[in-house]
Image 1 (spheres, helix red, strand yellow):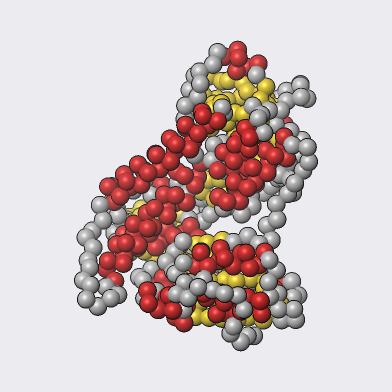
Image 2 (cartoon, rainbow, N blue to C red):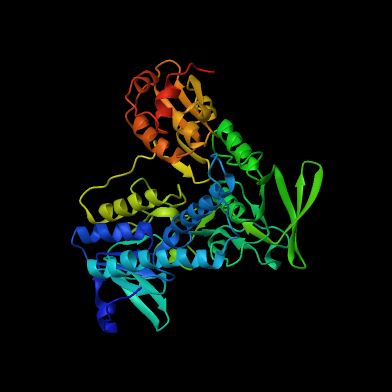
Length: 477
């Protein structure tokens, strides 16, 4: 990331209206909002410009998943008369292609973008420092050329999150992968153990399975995708298992160790013990807020048990001049949430009134194939909240678009209030589930009833037709 050279004394004496710690999605949104308000802005970045989503998250993973899907499709031969095949993967070339695309994104949006917008950029690790002046907050930026002090009337902490590595005996002694490092491999491992069966682990498991690895997923919960509707996660598990991915659920790992060129993993399920081995092991047990070395105590900023920066509904921390946005707050780790929070944090910090976000209708997608996507309450959540509910289901095999496309794995579940008909949640496994749930988000936001949804126009031979069709079914509960 480039910045306009300045004399050190100019840097020292300038007091910015807003400074972001980080340059990812939340930070960029905050900085752009501040510039829109014609305020002076700086960003501090200690790593590669662009943050998690651009460099090691959504963009590289979805790029590689799209490539792997093409190979998988070529091996399936779903249509008579069309003979397709797929050669072994040149992963080094595929990763190079991915890196080229990311580099172009980075240069356009995270190097040229800030420069053209009039945003100053400081390279180095940020740390709050004690200041006697109550009119601004001071930060030390530890860069390759020494320490630069930066002052700001407002700071937005947007330092993101990093892979959480659980305490497993022997793990530190083996060369394990994370979702961040796995997408830079130059050779497809013959076999792979994935520790973690939620969104990141499932996406990575299918990626490497489709690239040619023999993959096993180990999950401590009793099912994969444990935070999703139980029927939906069961359908996904069956589909992925049919594609060759093996799952071990309710599993506790008691030991990891190197065995020659392989990694051995001792797993206990109930009273049984299993020893698994693979060429590579990947840790995909989630991400934890990254606040290490920020010296938050210097400015009395409170953090939670996972290191998250504690904020109120306006994204303000316990220090009135410091705000936080994105993954570092410990909330939903989605790029669209980070962007909206970054924009809101800057607006609240620099504007005349405070605002907040509504997270009640927040969609989520796991980009496996078939995709898993959800919005609103599950049946279990409705029951726990004491809401009278009913459930409707539609197998994806009954959706015309899925039939003609030969993508019939999946299920749509609609949860509604049994007394009022109001739709409480829609959950889906199936082709283009993310797009369908995108439409479902608008349905829930409009407080629609099942009866209203059933009467809406819907174009035939689209996957979104499944919303209308599931609403027309009779309740199964």
